[in-house]
Length: 223
Image 1 (cartoon, rainbow, N blue to C red):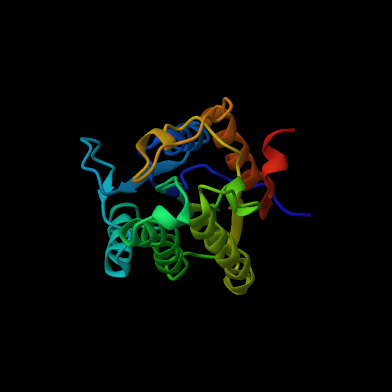
Image 2: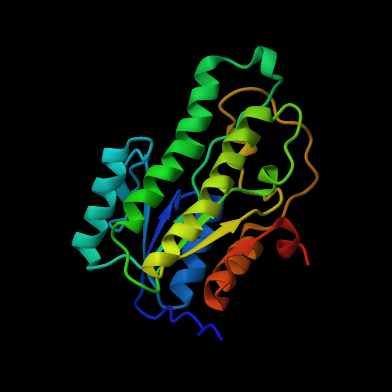
């Protein structure tokens, strides 16, 4: 039987930790006793924040090194960063395609690679690929493809990471009210139905860490 995860004084890193879901994840982890640091390209006043552009493998490596220098270890890494774009593929620019994959796929891979190289047995990696990775949608084809690639990567990473005793969770929450759609890098979002509360999603993801889960499909967040 899997032993419950002990959060007390564990060091958690959240990429995209200043966003809607990232902030909720931070609160949940801190409530359970974790020391939490966020990573993003922004420069908030929070002294625990690490400013880094994870689209660069060198930046991802440096960010993990900085976290370890500050806290001595990294036990949980959650990737909650992402960008979205809308519109049919025949009007989607090359720059938009590149940015979606650089942030959602390449940045995710670079972060997970740097993290796994610095994590001890019993640590946990969480990638949030989202419901779009289960079924892509017209008008979101490139965004969906970038997230599906991340999900595919997570599946293989989970098998590789087991050799080091590190667990990988792929989380695929349905549409969540994080405000991401309103910050699209291209196109106009469709009228989505009201999404899930980020606090609800964060609690379920943290519970998955606690319970030893490795896969968190969209259905697990709506039941």
